[in-house]
Length: 354
Ligand SMILES: Cc1ncc(COP(=O)(O)O)c(C=O)c1O
Figure 1 (cartoon, rainbow, N blue to C red):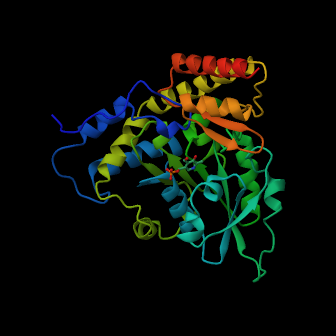
Figure 2 (cartoon, protein in one colour):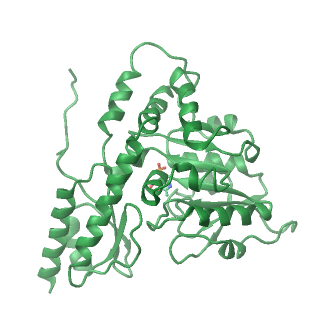
């Protein structure tokens, strides 16, 4: 028995973000399984050790997994380990590390980000070249890492070939590739490929692997695919405040997600619900869906008044005030009924507007 009180309505769901969802029941079960008794703290526990094998199964024999608390932490620690103090990271202007991490890469890691405008959140070798220059010039922060996001912040995907082309190009320039995979499971499910197809097999050096959006309570993992790409990760994770003492509870969640097919079931559901939502709202006169819907994000352009009224009924974010673009995210627990109810509300508010 607990003295805690349920303070929310479990039937209410929104489309603001996939991290508004709760924890998948199989993950909660795993946390309970790892509970009771004592285990060595700081990652020397049996769950974290077993997890290495699980990650090697997905990413190949040289993969090393470093559990951390959150995605910002995974990105910052990974990028710190990949760069020297005079080096810089090339990323899309829309990259989470640039737009949504409160300046953590700059503030807590002293990282210089060299940003590139992109049409759809994706970098290409040509776009990378707009910032990958000045090698050997002491006046320019030395481009060292290309950081890409899969699925991107704009809901688009890189094909495995697209990632390979970026990795080959970066490596030719003497650079490394980091992949922010907060939604890597959604990408693999949508592409119908194993997780390693656009990571290990494409030449990515280091990955931030997302757990929270895939159904965990919390927890992400830095996955080192090329051990020569990082220095001091063990020390950097601690002095970046990302070393969990009760790490067994992060690790066992990842085991539950990745040892079987839970990751795929969750990602497939989120993606399918986004496709269903896009199809439904495209049929509503006056609603524009301006971007490709490739994973679990749907972007739409609506009149501002409609957005305001809808936001009183459902949680979601405005992406661009100027254009009226909004973002709707689906999660592992979004149901067809949730989508249909929401699409009906969009249709109703659009009719009221007309
Ligand atoms: C692309 C991307 N990277 C990383 C993160 C992780 O962020 P957090 O620090 O909130 O776990 C997010 C979460 O929104 C994200 O969308």
